[in-house]
Image 1 (spheres, rainbow, N blue to C red):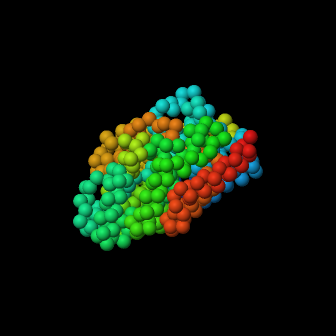
Image 2 (image 1 turned 90 degrees about the vertical axis):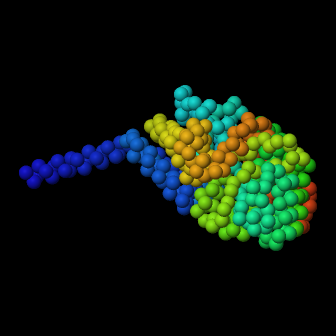
Length: 433
């Protein structure tokens, strides 16, 4: 009897093992750690538990740049993952990697409804024909964060209108006069104050529809509108009204600590600010210059998308399609949007979030969605498709820092950034032929 039981037990174990082996494994490389890494792991666990045909294995491969480089190296070695997370500035690099990627619209098949994805979100990752090349995953856009307590302490109505940069400038004067040490700071200076500034005011950041219409694009962010904005910020920096903290999100710590009154940052800063801020805060739309535009256009996204790599089996591609469809579902997208502050990638997820009462319970969390969807994107506000843009951002950062330090005027700095950046674009163009 014991012998029979042992055989049955062994058979059960063997059967379970064979069932596990029958599952197709999907490799997913990403760049998230901390809370975001936990939420990705939760998504993967939910998907794996929802069906028995596929197992997604998520692996952290470093920061955005490191993850992209790891994916490129793996492809060259013939060991690429099925899915690779790539930040938005790596889009042109992925498109130029001939034979390395399989467009998402091909992976998803004939029944794939691309219309359900928000235009200003998916636009960054589409072909000239409007086909999705990768799936938007974590998409954010810049907004203005306000420390209402700091305004009130300075004798300023916390409900004062901050829609335009002209109005922001007046408030910065009042904050400075009231002795506030950090009237305003920012995160991601190039992304917010040049890339998004250009889109929001419907002026070109680069020629050829910001690179969407060809690699023979040239940078154009040294025009009058951008020079005026950077010049104003340079004056604010000289007067102690704008405090520069660093190229990435170093200013976030200052704002969350209650030191700064105003903060331009990603909408995805919501989770951290809500968790740490011990003051009454508010999110407002990104300001615009009324002297440049009668009303704002739309901002563009930051974050990353998911690229499907070539060289996989039909079974693996079927699993990838199932996983990406799962990530796009209204319930999963709504939860991701609410947990992180990232934009929902479909209108259904935004509608579900609203119907669940999240926006009512968390005022202002829908501003990013409205800001991105109120208008149909133009050729200047669809996004950027520029090669070597990670390195170009580094050049822009250097030149902006020279303005904040008072070493260069805005025109000189932006002219230099354009000239240096164009040299990188020409090398990318040659390498892409």
